[in-house]
Image (cartoon, rainbow, N blue to C red; front, top):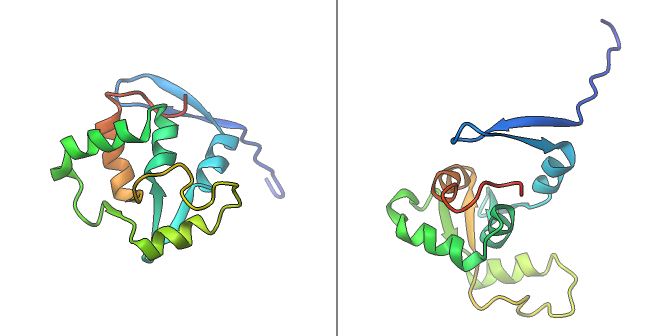
Length: 128
């Protein structure tokens, strides 16, 4: 099959509860745009993950705090003042200074996101 072209528009993801959920390529592309490089690691920010799970950021962070032993430093970390400033500078917003945040966000590495999925499936599956 020389010059064959593969046309993929969506894929199925099997969740822990044996339910299958369809995820479009657009969903995957949107998720890619939420991955940042901080401290030389590819991470996702707590508020973006909370949005994926359809919960408030504080609810996601409470679930993490209840299971803090599952999240060592290589799974998640809180941004420093400089990291927070640099991360915020990537956005053009009218309320750029605080962006509606009271605290510096947590960043989750790939391992942290995987662990978060087991902690947060109780809350709501991703890709609402």
